[in-house]
Length: 362
Figure 1 (tube, rainbow, N blue to C red):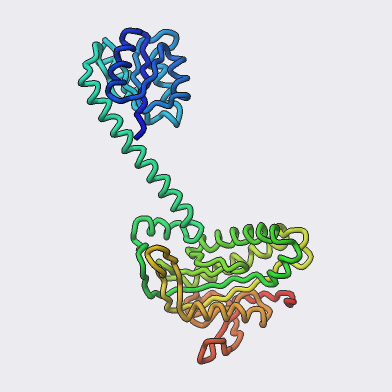
Figure 2: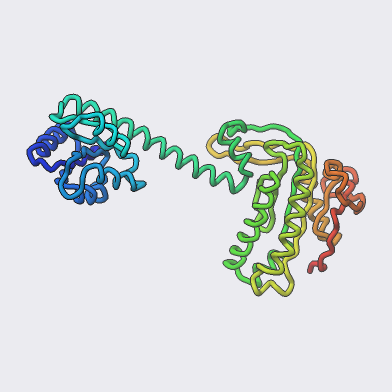
């Protein structure tokens, strides 16, 4: 285990030598600074875990040194014990209000000093562990925010939503988004530019999904699988899914006009979206060594098949009847027809949402 480092800031050489000798015997690594400027240099080069700071110093008073120590993020939490023969209330109050961690009266009682140093370093160790845990938590949070909306991430981190193996059946809306002709696009602009293009586009789409309380469950190379109401139903998940799809439709119009790589501007990027609603299983599958949050069920398959149908019908967005029933009365829907979809026993009633005609796909 690394030795804790203590910086002694003391202009009296005898007092400094005494402290240095005993601190070394107690197992600490030490440095001595006879004045304020040198103390500040050691704060950078020595990076102490604790500072013993005499108040009355040449060149730069001890309290000014303390202010400068506290002004840096790196040393803001480092314990600083101020030392003085003057233990008046005024000195104590000014010192503590400036940022001192403790006050040590001279002449120093070594047994008392040893106990206080040990306590301060233990507290510092706990604070550093808490800081490290908070950093890990923030890192995990940022990773989760790539897949879930902020409110769902907060519930996952607070364990309102389980991270254990298993899951539950719930009502949700499932959206498939697909980029048409992705192979042709990749061949035209090359793999590196294609990766940059798809990352930029998907980043914008994912933001819109999150804005409408959705979650991104899978990135499928040239497509996105998103859910609304999973893992936390809202009561208006079908409406959220369709509103997100409309926002994506608006984004795609702007994206085709302003943000496409030059090689793609002539033809633009075509896309399709399918939405289905119903009971799905949502939860962690796999093993305790490797978990994956997954969604499974008939609406997942139906949304994928409906999305395939958008290409055949030359529209950008189709939804199933269950999704249509979950929308507000003001929604403008047009019955596209009853279709036999692969994997389904009966015909599925499919609707267009404010249909937008696209150029025929190649």
